[in-house]
Length: 609
Image (cartoon, helix red, strand yellow):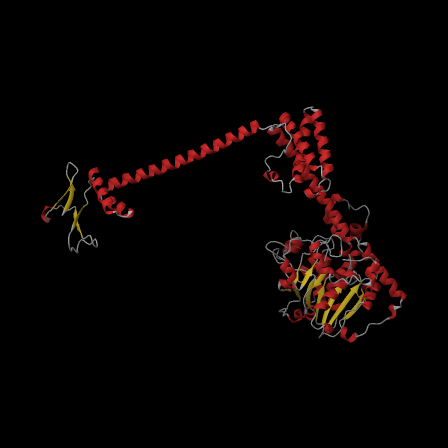
C-alpha cells in the first residue's frame, strides 16, 4: 500500500506490486522496523528526495488534531515526512529565529539601561544642590536613620572639605577656603575621640548638615573630576606616609612598654625582699634535698626574674597535677630578685609540691671562659652595640633595632636553658617552662612520650610558609645555607620536654657553643635564644601534638577560642604579656584567675586583675 498526493494535493492510496518498485524503496514492518520480518500490513518508505505538498502537511495536521496525539508524536510524524533537504532548511530557520530572539532581548536590555541612565541624569539635573543635606549621597547606608552612620558621614565630609579647600586656595577663592576650614575645625571638635554615633555631641547632626551645605556650594563652584581626583590621590599619599610614621612610632612605644616594669610589679619584689631579710629567712636551708635529685619524680625548670609570672606558672601546674606531691619545681632567678622569689614561695608554697629557688650567680662554673654569651658580652663590639650613647636609638632606625637591644637578650637567665645537664646533673628528663605560660591540664603524660632518640620534644610552629628556618636564620650566609634546610619547620620554646641523658650523650651544649662563637658578629642570626635553639637541636627535635602547647596569646587577637581552651599549655609569647596593660583583654582571664588578688603583698602593691 502506498500513500501519495496528486496534483491537486489530495491524499490518495494505491496498491503496488513488488515488480513495480525501484531499488530506492524499502519494506519495513511498522511494529519493529525490521524489513526482513514482514507480518501484517506493510508500509513502503521512499528514500528518494521528494517534498510533500502543503496540502499533505495540512491533512496530516488535521489528522493529528482529530486524534489528539502527544506533542512529541506530532513532531516525529511531521519530521518523518520531511526530506533531508527540508530538514536542513528547518534547522537553519530555527537558528535564525534564535538569533533574532537573542538580538531583540539585547536591544530591550540596552534600551532599559539607557532609560535608567537618562532618568538618573534628569534627577541629578533637577536636584537642589544649594539646599542643606547630606553630601555623600552615594552612601546608601546614610539613608537609614537607624544605622550608626553620622560619624562616618562627618569623617567623609572632612576629607572632601580638605580637598575642596586646597582647590579653592589654588584658585584664590579665599572666602570659600576659609568657610571650608571653619567647618572642618567645627566637625573635628564635635567628633573628638568618638567611635560611634552614641558618643557624638548632640549638635553633631546640625554640624553635618551645615558641612553638607558648604560642600554643595564648593562642588558647584569648583568641581572638576580630574582636579578632585588628583587632589584626593595626593591626600592619600600623604596619609599613607603619616600612617607609616605612626606605625614606626607605635612599634617603638610598644617595645618600650614591653620592657618597662610597671610600678606594682616593681613594688612587689621590693616588699618581699625587705621582709625576707627583716625576718632572717636568708639563713633558712632547703628541705627535701633528696627529692630535688630524684629522677623518678616530675621535674620542672623555670628561669625567671618575674615573681608574679612565676607564681602563676607554679599555681596553674600544681592545680591540674594528678599527684602534686611528685612534682618538683626548680626555679632559677638573678641576684636582684633572689630574695623576693625565695620569700614568695616560703610564704605561698603550693601544697605537697616541692619548690627550689636558686641564684644564677651561685653557678660558679658559668663564667666567660666556658660560656660563649658571657664572653661575647665582654667584647667591645657588643658593648658598642648595646651601651654606647651615640648608637642610633631613635625612631628612625625602626623597631627591630630596639627589639634586639631588649635586656632580656643579654640575660643569662634566657640562655641558661642550653646548660640544663650541667644545672641538674642527676636528672634524666626535665620539662622546661617559660614564665609567660599557663598550664591548663596535667602534664605528667609528657614524661611517657617516646622521643625516639631525639633530645627535645616541642610543638612545631610552621603553618604553610610561616615560621620556617628562613624566618630566623640568615641563609645568605654559606655557613647557614650549607648546613640547614631553609624550609625546615620551626618549633617553640616555652614548653619543652628534654631528654638529659641523650643530651649528654650527643654533647648538645658543645654544639650550642660552636655556633654561638661563629655568630659573635651577629651575621648568622639576630640575638635571642630561638635561632641558636633551632640550630642546636636541628634534626634532634621530636614534634609533639599541637594540643600540648598553643602559642600567640601575646600578639595574635584572632586565635581559635576552642584551641585555647583545649590546650594543655597556653603561651603569651609576644609583647602583650598578661601582667601588662598592653595585654589582649579577651585572653587575660586565662592568666589572671591564677593570681590570688587577696594576697597581702598584692594588696600592698595594688596588684589586681
